[in-house]
Amino acid sequence: MPGLAQSLGAAQAQRQTQETTLSMQARQRLRLLPLPLPELRAELRRQAEQNPFLDYQEPLVGAVSLDAVAERDAAVADETEDLDYLNASLEGFGDQADPEALAEATRRHDWLIATQTEPETLYRHLERQVLRQMAEGPRRDLTLLVCDALDADGYLREDAHALLADWWQANGGQPPVAFTEADAEAAVKTVQGLDPVGVGARSLAECLALQTRADPRDLPDRALYLRLCDRLGSLLTESRERLARDLRCTPEELVGALAYLRTLNPFPGRAFAPREPLESPEIVALRGPDGRWRAVCDERRFPLFRVDEAAIEAARAAARTRDERACVTDLAERARSEAEAYRERNDTLRRVAQAAFDRQGAFLDSGGDPATLRPLLQKEVAEAVGYDKSIVSRVVRDKAVRVATSRRLLPLAGFFTHAVASEGEEAVSDQQAKGALKALVAAEDPAHPLSDQALAEALAAQGIAVARRTVAKYREQLGIASTRERRRAAPKGTGP
Image (cartoon, rainbow, N blue to C red; front, side, top):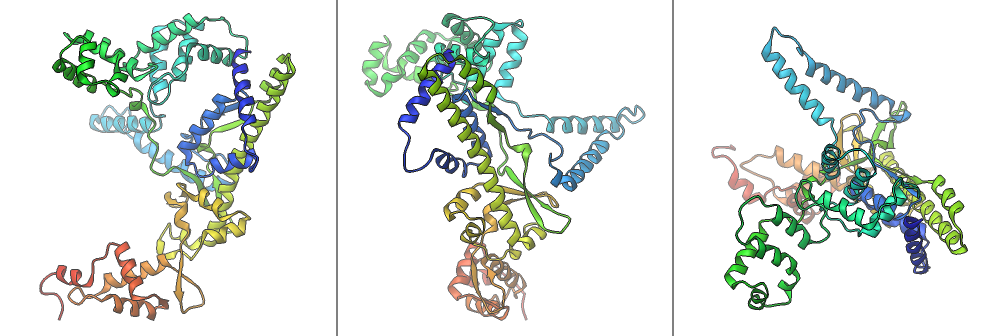
């Protein structure tokens, strides 16, 4: 079990260095809480790569409807709208009597299909080339394994021995062919011959050398460029004059070689980096039959991350020594702890969002109008759900909510706002005060704009007691000019 043996050794070393002040699961949960979805997926994928007893599967982001009974109404609305759009897109499709309508319908249909297709990734790009160039069999599978081992920059961070360990692990310890390190190196060379040029490199020097060799132009100094690739580290330790002597060139030729290397792409994989939306909504706000807003995790966007119990049983059966059995147990415990931390992270997010929804129903009713926000501190939600305030702070960071009725995206942190002094029975949030201030400025006479003191008095008449300096702070935050600047910008001839 070569692949498992490496993981077991790593797990044993990690166990010896664990902190005793905080449990493993608590530290794992704290690490996962603040991560937005793209970073969460990357972290879970990394954990699954390090632990053979963890199973990771990418989320079904492209699903049409939300896969939950509680989201039935939103799913029906979404599906109806999608079908209406599809029908509209195909209207006139195949109608030979109207070529223009046919062309427009075809264009819209192609656009619809394109937007429903998963984005291109580096692995998919390489996979298509491998499937086209190589016959089916173990060697093609090994080449695809190398493609899968590349990082987001297109680099291969594993040596041949580690690749072979992955090969054994991917085949459950019984691969169809027991490849050698020479076979792994051959697979790496195959990947390095794919597009984009430079992928599969083990270092920056190798990446630039691959691109230099593949450059189709007639480069008289190609040999010099390749020698410089091998000596990239010397740029930081040696003078240009000495480096030029070592490379058997003049200082001017060295400058030209450096200029050429700067035209190459040091990160060939980044062109295929997934483009996540600015806000990736993990929580959907749904109105229940009772009119109450409910927080539901959008399962389409969450990856499947679970313990592979079958792999644990197989490893236990294959273990021959006490140390191997102990390490299998340790890895299994870590896998269960990681999976439980992931479940707790999502449950904590849902509970915090639900507590915020319970207090900000008017805000959701309005589709996200800040003027409808009630005062709500993170400390209040923390007390309601039984967590520490620091936990709530981590949970709401970089998270977004999709309101099912309006399809608007709202930052979860935006549900929290401070209170300002109020003469009424119900407290007023600072967002409500800002909304009232904005309305007063919009209704003022442009030729005689209100001063900050007059605005404070007008707000007080509405039951919002704020000081003049607070009005000035809110005005600056809203991008509202001062009284003098507003008067100067007023159109000529306005006023009495």
